[in-house]
Length: 314
Image (cartoon, rainbow, N blue to C red; front, side, top):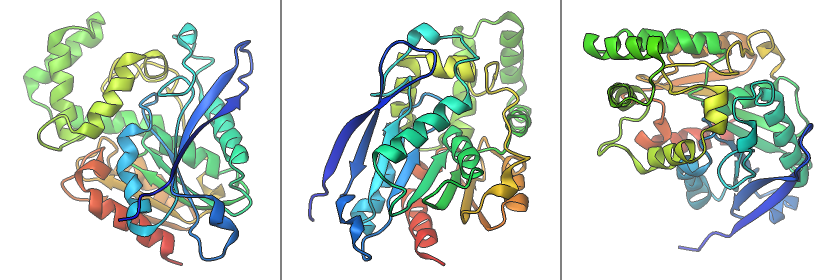
C-alpha cells in the first residue's frame, strides 16, 4: 500500500486581549496540492470536541484518506493538544466562548487557502456545535457539513443527559446528586459513578477505555483549562460558559447539505438533533444502533462509508 503523505504545521493566531503570540497546530493527511485538478477530491476539515479533547481521538477518520484518497485535515483548538495552551485564563468564562473558536477556524481555513477549491466540514460533539454555528454564516467554500453526536442547544443537551442519568441505578444517582450538593467532584465515588455513565453513553468499546477515548481523556486531564471553564467537572455536571449556548434560531440559514448522525445510546439523544432535521433545509439524519457518543470508534467502518457516501452523493 502506498504511504500517504502527512504534513504538520502551525499557523499564527492572534487572540484579542492577549499579549502573547498563539499558534494553532494542524495536520494534513494526503496532499492538498493537487486540488487544482478537477479529479482530486475535496478535503475534509475535522473539528474535535471536548471542549479541549484534542484531535487524536478522531484519527480513525484518516481511513477516508487511505481508503478513498480524500485529504483529511485535523487541528487542535487553542488551549489544548499541540496548540498554544493558556492556563492563565482558567475560569475566565468571558474568554472561553464560541466566537474565539469561530475566529480560529476562519484563520486556519484562510491559511490553508481552502476557500478557493472548497472544503467539507466535520464536527464531532462540541466540534459540531462550532460547525453548525459556523455554517449559519454561509462561509465561502463550504461544500458539505457533518454534525456528529452534537446538540442544537446546550439546554437540549442537559435535558438529554438528565434523561440518561435518571436511568442509572439508584445508588449511582444518589452519589452524583450528593456530589453536586457538596462539590466534591474529585471523590473516588463520583469518579466511579461517572465511569459507569461513560461506559454506557460515551464509549462502549471493550476493553474499556478504547484508545480513542484514552487519547481524549489524556488531553482533558493534562490541562483542564478549556473543559473545566466551558463545561465543568464531567459530562454529567455542566457549570461553565457553554450554558445558554444555542444555534436553534439560525439553523434555517445553513445552506450546505448536512449529514447528522448519533448513536442510539449517545449522550446526544434524539431531542438534541431533531431541530437540525426540521430546520436545516437540506439534511439527512442517521442513528447508528448499539452506539454511543464515540460512534466513530465503535462502528469505524460503517461511519467511514457513511461519510464518503454522503460526500460522493448529489
